[in-house]
Image (tube, rainbow, N blue to C red; front, side):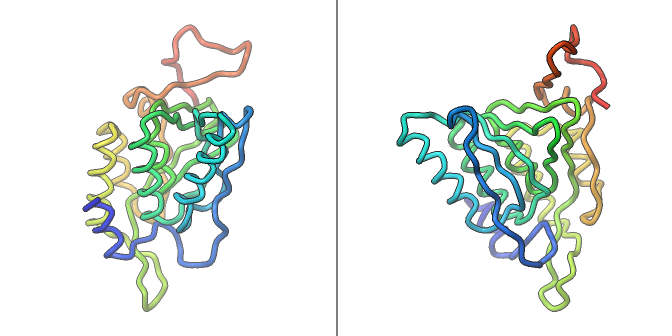
Length: 203
């Protein structure tokens, strides 16, 4: 909670300060999966919680959350991550044609089990702050350190943390198979193209 409070007090965002639409959470697989699509904005944690509650009302437990998001609000991403980490029973997945970047990584990292496909993309960079006078996004080292603390708490490996810290706020570095292996991420392959071992190049 102190970590979230610190970020809120600094009014940090991980994307440019222009209006964006909230992410959507659509049910899939009879409601056992939810698909999150779009930018992460204030209120998304509430929307996800409602989607999970609606499924529970129908007697369905949400087992996994598919992610397709370029990121957005760092604070909201953190709150989503904290909610998932506390639940401890929802897997996170980046689909075969999808990407999860910036603050979306916080959500992905909090999954019970984490899954990617050969063509999934997960992008990372250091945190940024919005200059309230100019509207420009600027790198913020203190926020990056706070986020790394959270990532460590949910088991993000050193190789990924290093890429986060080394990538400037206005750039993206995509994770590779070595990062996935170090993290223990499950890699799914199309039917008929399943390798003997999951330790093969994805790209």
